[in-house]
Image (cartoon, rainbow, N blue to C red):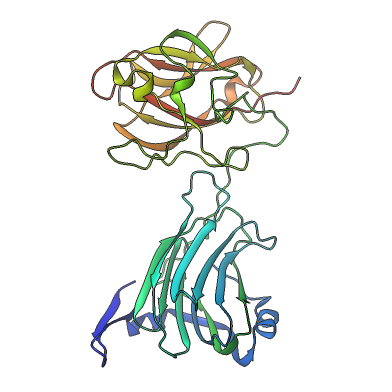
Length: 357
């Protein structure tokens, strides 16, 4: 969103969305005045959306923390928190539970904002994945959030350590800036529930349990929880409930030979089930002939699908549509037959729908 920058009377920099942003306001969904947080939440129960313009004026009272929760699912499994800590004078966004998608980065970021006895004034713009929050016209936070649930559109207020008062709270539907309507996006991973997983598909054991070193130098030392590679970062490996430590297979690992190491690693052989959609995270060198992760048919060794890296350590997810091979015995093979610069391949979170026997 374009912003208006100004010099405030006290000599500090002011920053707010441009006045024209208000022209995008559509139907007003809530108009709340002089009430408690509990009453405000009752009136927000039916308010939701992923394109919203929110204005709030809050008297923090004796509360130590005030939080506006946005993009919240009904069960709270997904939610993004915008909080002001009155003791530390810190405004922050907490994305720890913004998305159930394991590929989406989580975390908290923010900074110091002094109120100097002022009330807390918030302007929050939600535009699908974009979240922009402005506090007291002096500071702003911009972030991306990617909820997976279609009901991840709710709003909620909380206060901790004391009682805060809602002076005013207005919520409008935000219209698009263009005439073409855009349907809400939703993450729908192709992961059927009536199948099993590939053994140790995400290396959560911290070693190569369930995998076989066919040849070369792959070893347990290639399995790591490192989030960066030392001269850059981050990997963006998967961090799931089953593997919160974020284990992944790093082909370069200097403790395992670096780029000079080569070899072939193979998963357990399974019967492909479900819808036949296989997905995994892959990164590393870009060499489709010598560096790749592949799904191989066990009966004749035919490579059904494969993918290499793109000359980058950051993972990207690839999806193979193998519906035509459902019912066949397959395995995943990681091939590193390259040495020298970028002579390695990395993988993580290999999702193969395994037919139950």
